Each structure stands twice: as structure tokens, then as C-alpha cells.
Image 1 (tube, rainbow, N blue to C red):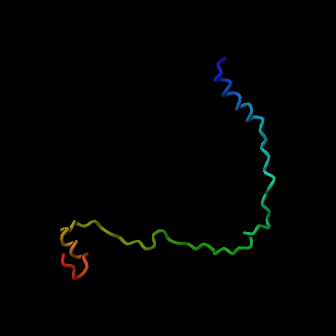
Image 2 (spheres, rainbow, N blue to C red):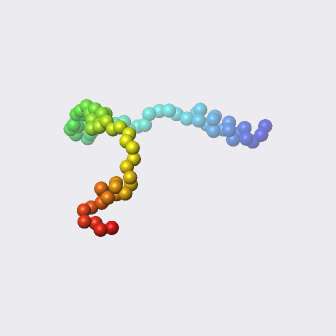
Image 3 (cartoon, rainbow, N blue to C red):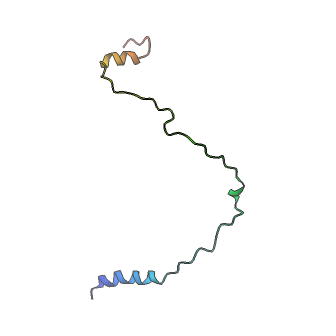
Length: 75
């Protein structure tokens, strides 16, 4: 047989012998987080703050720039 089959078969055979026991450390019910107060979760609508907008035609860019520029800017 080719050595490739041994490289594949050896880890598969070794993993079949592994144990699946739980860890020795298990959290108890008397943990520190049990003493913390948690604020109840309230309902929030996913549409809160939604405003309906419709497509509009573009305006000339020069007028848009002048409307957004600060007052007194002589550029």
C-alpha cells in the first residue's frame, strides 16, 4: 500500500480512541453573574424613525454647493 493511506488512516484510528468526557470544571448555579441585575429588554419597532422618501430629479450641483456653504464664505 501507499504511505498516503497510512497517513490518512492513522489519525482516523487515533481519533476513534479519544474520550469524549465532559471537562472537570463545571459552572455552578451560584456564579457571580447571578447577582447582577439585568435591565429587561423592551420592544423596539424596526420601522421607528422611518421617513418615506421618493426619488427626485437632480438639481444643478453649483446651487447645491452654494446652499451648503457657510455664510460669508467668499470662495
